[in-house]
Image 1 (cartoon, rainbow, N blue to C red):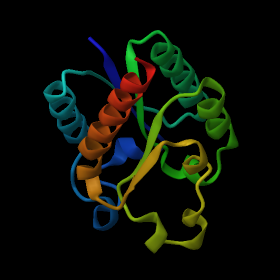
Image 2: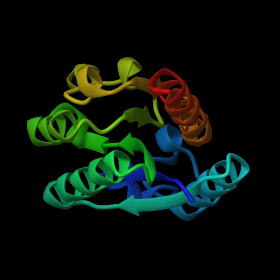
Image 3: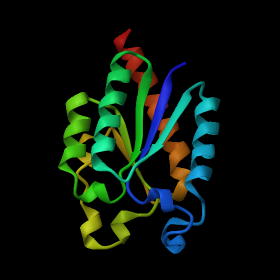
Image 4: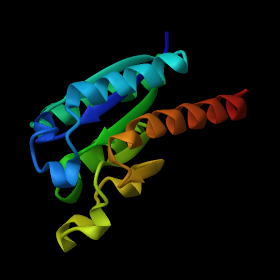
Length: 156
């Protein structure tokens, strides 16, 4: 079964308790359940991961890119958290392995502090979902699925 990967960056393990006025009260386990339901409905397996470590995220991006090249994965939905605004390493990993990524943010980063307005991930993402709360995760999975199907049609 083909997989979709959902990667979550730093502090997303605190989802549901950290700044609920910004991020809501849904836990990361609840988000995983939403993603699993969406993936299964599309006939996909789900790999759901969270790390506070930039290096571990880079490793997972490399692994996911290899899985895409092998035809076992459609790409990743990626909520890089604060690394969005700071990590050239994540940008370079996505670009270098050519991983199809939909960048996702629970809050509308463009309505927040100015330092959150810049993303190092957006230039290498196939698309972004911003500000739709945790409901953005299933939408991003669905979008990535459609993008992968369109790519298969062009490759045929």
